[in-house]
Length: 105
Image (cartoon, rainbow, N blue to C red; front, side, top):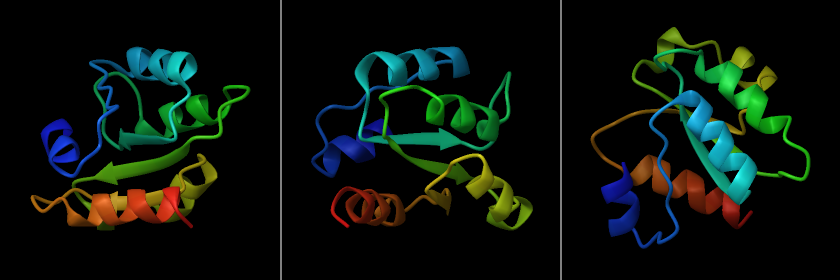
């Protein structure tokens, strides 16, 4: 995904190797947009979403992505603080369009 974001013109991209690292990056850098995978190694993506949304002074838009949209409860995603829920695809266009919509409403 980092390569696709760079190709789309995004320059300030950070990637986390773990859930805790992702939350720490959000806390330190206060990003405009955060993309969280629904299925993570040590935690549920929705838990990470809630933790990021609870950071004081952070107003990031959060996109939760999943490999199987039909297997994810959209209401649970919204309740966790997700601004968008998207299906991961080989084509990057849906993520790029969502980022644009969230940045420039």
